[in-house]
Image (cartoon, rainbow, N blue to C red; front, top):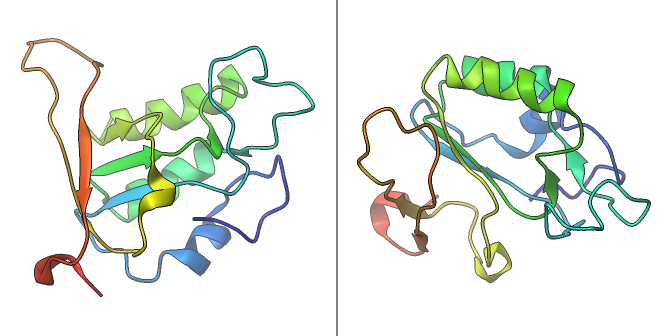
Amino acid sequence: MIEHLAPNSYIMPDDLEKVCGKLKEGDILILDSPYALPPFTAKTNTPEDKRLFICRKTALWLKDRKVKCVGFGNGVSIENSNEDVCAFHDVLMEENIVFLEVLENLDQLKKDVFFISYSPLPIKGLDSCPVRAYAIEGLAEFSE
């Protein structure tokens, strides 16, 4: 959870450095903030929408850290502008980094480190599909 940024701020590499000290190559990083708003609704990109933004610099930081997947809670806008979202996707999709968009119930998690699993449909050539993602806290192999 990125809590130190003002509403409608971009998540920049320095911000990620502050909250991702435990991140290792091959990890999954979930981005969220306290500014939750359901995406792709009539409130999207209105004055009521205070979510944080992603951009090319965010993606390059994630690429350099070699994450295998990045997920988004409802506190991060994945549709604020085509320029930002396309750049983010272009950088990470080139590296086959998976996106988990519109994750729900992240507020139920009590730990920063947990096991997460997701299973896409095995359709050749598919670039997106719904998945059921779930998290388990307290496993020894996935704890601080």
